Amino acid sequence: MNFVATQYPEQSAVEGFQTFAEALPCIVWIADAAGKVEWHNRELWAYTGRALQAEVGWGWMPSVHIDDRRSITRDWAHSLASGTVLDSVVRLRGEHGSYRWFAVRARPFYDSNGAIAKWFGTLTDIHDRQIAVEANTHMVDAMMKGYLSKKFPTVKGLVFDTLYRAANVMEKIGGDWYDVFELPDGRIGFSLGDVCGHGVDAAVKMGEAKQAIFVAACLGDPAPETVLCQANRVLFLNNHHVSITTALYGIVDVARRTVTYASAGHHPPILARANGEAEVLPNHGFPLGVEEHMPPRIKTHEFAYEFGSTMVLYTDGLIEFDHDLIDGESRLLAAAAESVRCGAAHPAKFIANQVLGDATPIDDVAVLTLSFLEE
Image 1 (cartoon, one colour):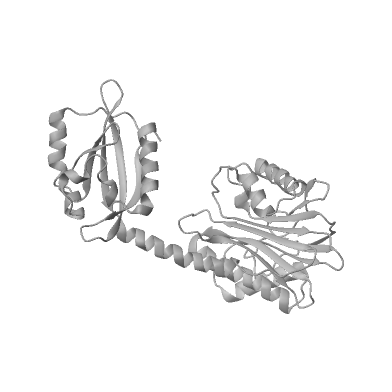
Image 2: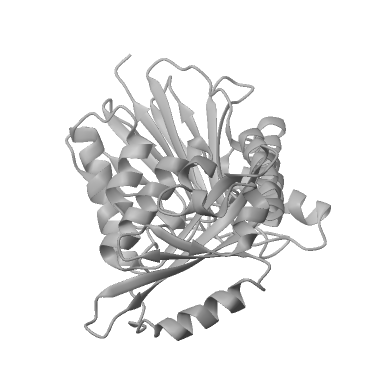
């Protein structure tokens, strides 16, 4: 983002700014057009304990944590070359050798000819906030690993691949899931779904929905439409407030080479055939959480799979990233077909990368692929 050019003030105004900056509780500094620090207030000296002149020019670099030097150098070089505001974070060593996190921000000021004359910057202590964010990140990482990371069943002729990407990168947590498990009769059950919302609350609801489908599949009639209806009932029994959840549950019967599945308001799965063509499979049904007793519109579908084909299940974050659902679905079909044609080693990741490109998802993304191989 380019800021409107701000004309560099006269020297008397600069001196007035320096006097004002000395009274501020944060570190303030001025650099020349090339990025060399010319002046800083006494807050930097008070924190580092180094002589005032030791931090000018490029003398401040030794105070930066060695692991952060590359990133701040890269960010600063980009701002100097583009004239955009510097907005970064670094760890700075204090007088007694310990490090604290600081937010680094600098803005260019221009001369009368429109060229950058100076950079005015600040260093703001954000250590406590940064530590809290890191602690939260570790917690949610462990939480999501518990929800999503598991060893899938080993089945001859059947290979699973998965991808999960949260829309909230800082929290790394969301309401999407995938699951694969062995049923009591030896067949393979799988599910994928999306709880409305983001963050910890959505993740908790996601865990409840995922587990409800698993229990319904293993303890009752495993027919897909029955499993989804029973899971919906369980969610209402356990909660006064049930989140709207779209889900798809299915069964792979390797002996019969068939897949049966049912959808509760979820996006239809994709089948990429061995000949390199992809198609949208049918689906029907209301989402979980709409009514305690599911409407009878939910239906089970079945198809016989061929060796060399791949079934793709996904959540809406994969195809709605640019608010163009038709384009997203078209890109998904093309990516699924290409993953089969090129024999992608990790089709879920391949498909997500092909569909999203450089775009940033606006919603959580989960992808589950089932590849049917010659035994």
